[in-house]
Length: 411
Image (cartoon, rainbow, N blue to C red; front, side, top):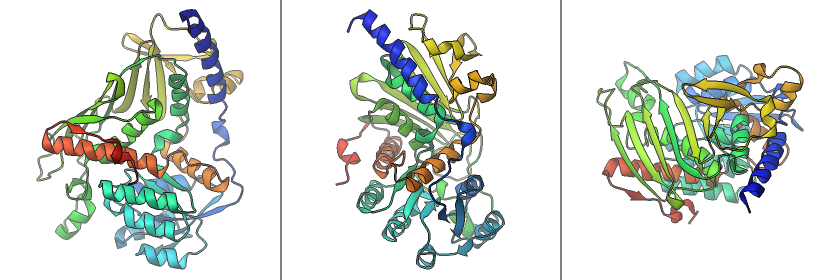
């Protein structure tokens, strides 16, 4: 293909991609389901409370049951789901609530395996928060159980259901940034990650993320989401990783690093940098994919494309809204931009009206209700978890660690 042919192709392809990606009517969310669904939630802690908040937006979803082994959290959940039946043990919930269509799992990561296996064995569709597991053995076991089950299974990687991420991905996959040169992600949030309690026995239960025996720390609880986005955008997985982790901000006796840096080697020589810290909030959370013709920045409810001066100009750019970042000008990627432009409401469409979690849940419910495919399978959840597990090993040992393809298989 000549340079001229390639420019013509990109112009037409990107225009087609834009037309496709602009189709979602976000004002119509949530989508009406073919039939109402009854769901049960296992885990009423921090993420469980966030899920309950989003579930209230879905008219076709009934929160039929909530389970948590902690009496205080269960009591708090009763205020958020007044019509539900409450259980202290998940097997009792699965045995008693035979009319449940789906189970949502939002417990500590190290508890996921048994909950997923039991819920799938009970014939339920399952949504499990990420990371899938903290060990390769558990992640593979969950993926095997999901493959053998009759129900749908979705790993809670919200990036894959995010409308603006889908729009950005369509441009990347069509060649808008051309050859990928590097990738970078970060998570910075000044927070201790510690839940205060005067009960020493309860401290271990509440602060499991700070326990290296059951937690991968930042690289697992946060990194898996970033890793999965890059896997989804590029269609590739890293082959090795180097990493460092230090306790720099919170010297309170914890053994899980509060500041982490990793470098991943991808096929073809591309490298990805990942860093996270609980000691600063500067620049927050985002991912970057830089190419020879442009760079895409992804930041939860927003996304931008920064074009090189010699990049092809697309027809859809007449609708584009731009934002200045120091010396760089970013095109704001807006799902539904064509329709919003026609209505004179383009500025109102900047950013998503709901948090990314909402769209992940919506995707799961639509997949269940319409017999579709969830946006992130258990096998993709396994791959992201495997990358995080190897990264944690690199941080622990200080050595470069290979990420073999066998990590991604179900064997």
